[in-house]
Amino acid sequence: MTLLKYTALAVALSVVGFGASAKGPKVEYDHAGITALDAQNASAVNWVTAETIERDLQGKGPITVSFDIDDTTLVSSQCFYYGQKTFSPNSYDYLHNQAYWNFLADGCDKYSIPKQSTRKLIDMHQARGDQVIFITGRTPHIDNEPDKIDQLGRILESAFKIKNMQPVNYTRDTPQAPYKYDKTAFIVKHKVSIHYGDSNDDILAAREAGVRAIRVIRPAVSTNRPLPLNGGYGEEVVADSSY
Image (cartoon, rainbow, N blue to C red; front, side):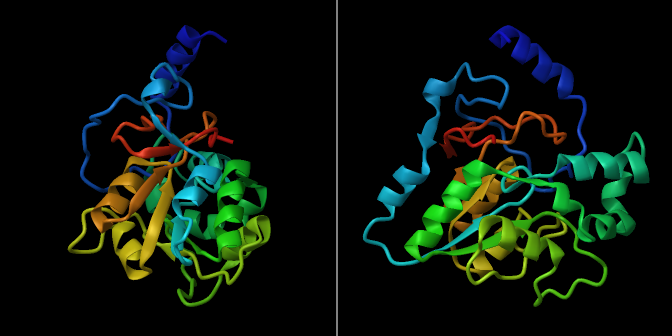
């Protein structure tokens, strides 16, 4: 498919979206960047890989790194697509329906696809002795116990062979004062050094917390539209991380 056709497809698909809308303040891009469908500005992006990140960390002791889940760690759009069609056709109301989040927490992620590019990042960090944690904008099951590992946590633990698995951090897409972005408080609480995520709010939350922000490319098949401009804030972007 030509770049022109990719761009046209991206525009057409941008009107369709089933992901949660971010709550933090919007910030205009100030750098050239790319989407998963349009790579015409690829030469302007600050690309990194698991290998270059590892080199950056040489000589440093173990750190804590955090990963977003949807579109960063798991390809989970099928769960959101089904949720919208089932709980609130043609609207985003399902994202405010606890019944949907209970459904999601009850095991839909058994069918989510672990991203191979993220597996490579996690393997690198764990080989260094780093602690890996997960921070998601999802709302947990109504019966969730924050200090215990839930079904999503066990799925992630198994799929990525997580050592010393910690309970998933659920932000409920709600910032905690005094912060503007929903993940910032958790990044600060866990003394995270690097946060990986696909959304603008992931990058902005990490920067708000004063830590290194690294973008993972949202898959082109994601129902969370529009696709973000990877590198649009001048942030580092993991090469070939859409899969």
